[in-house]
Structure formats: structure tokens, C-alpha cells
Length: 104
Image (cartoon, rainbow, N blue to C red; front, side):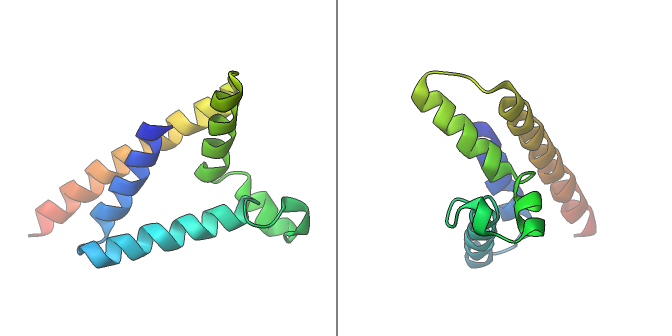
């Protein structure tokens, strides 16, 4: 969970050039994902399209994994999604860093 979240934050920081912009980007994207995943308002009260999109967002799987760790169980599908998101965000961070370095 931690490595996937760190890769997500690193990706957003690499996209933004300044500290303030990266902080706002992390806050707003996290807030939108938490809302879409049904953590602020239950999923049954969300519009259908938002609930469907929220089921594919990384926060949904991070929260499921966190709950599973607290209960002493494992949830293999969410673990796979979390690992995939971590690899995706880390690879994207490396790619964006390479492209930004090449432009300068």
C-alpha cells in the first residue's frame, strides 16, 4: 500500500513543477478519488457513472487493503490492483522525468 501511494504522490510531484502546485494537485486528486470511491458519501448515493468510475480508482483498492490488514486478512485482487497502480505510477514518473529532462 505504502509503495503504491508513494509512487502516486511522486508522479503528481513530477508533473507539477512547484511545491505549491504539487500540494494542491495531491489534495484535489485525493479528494476527488475519495468522493468517487464512496468514502465521503456511500456509493449507493452517488450517481451511477461516478460509482462505476470510483470502483477502478486506486484509492478504492488502497482502502480495501488497509481494511484487510486491520482485520488480519488479505484481499488478493486489491493487492494486484495496488501493485499494478504502483508500477504504473512509478513508470509514468520515470517517463515524465525523462521527457522533462530532455526538453531542458
